Amino acid sequence: MATLRMNGDDEAQLDLSPIFLPGQLKQATRTARIEGQRISLSDAITGARPGSEIRWAMTTEAAITLNGNEAILKQAGKTLHVRFAGTPVTLEVVDISKPRADFDLPNPNARQLVAHALAGADGSWNLSVRFSRE
Image: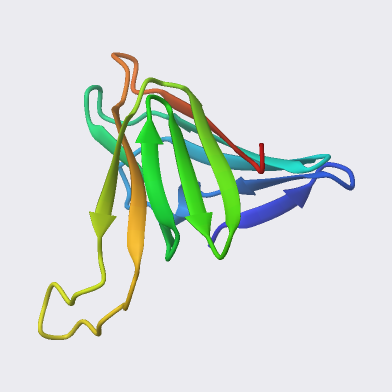
């Protein structure tokens, strides 16, 4: 089971290590920070198999435009900028609106913003994601 620790009023850290299978990695943490009108997530993984693919994803109904290391999400007249830093990632948008298997249900208008990257030679992976309206 993942554990949560508060670091003051504007920061929380999740130890996600227990949710992975034994041997997949040594440690996985996510730190969430509120920075005024911005939110940032910082993910850190150690002890992964060197060169293994690590995937970060979020599901949304917003229209997504990719521009380098940034995704721009637009929905109902509002815009959200999602900027990636840290381990270089490849961004893609995946349509998940239609069921992929017989047991899946439709997710009308749903898509995923996906970031892929490879773990380093030492098995580490670090990614920072900043969400802002600007």
